[in-house]
Image 1: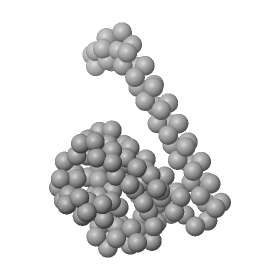
Image 2: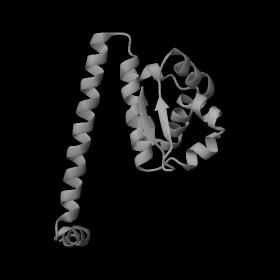
Image 3: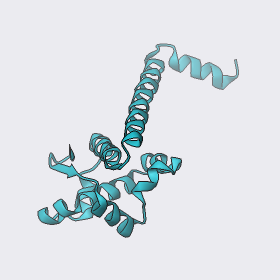
Length: 145
């Protein structure tokens, strides 16, 4: 079971099991198990933080109910790093939920590679932004020189 903290400092446990997968499907019409066959699901979740936070809320719903925290209140405490940490916890739990050991290993490798690629891409963007000639290069390209 993975955990993350929201922006209010509250710790949440993310657990994916047959009950939580069914709850997400029933409440949000999202089949978490299709992430193995639907290459667009993970991309859609990454590009739709509102749906992503809704899914994480449903995964943590039992805790939220115990704490009397509504989905709206939960969402208010989710932004930036909290969403990133919750996403990582959810993806790790999805991988661990897979009943096939070989598939679990392949998914772990795929997610590790995704993290590496994201780090590389982020470093390259930061390097370009830090270049003292960055603005001059853009202005030159915009003027057609």
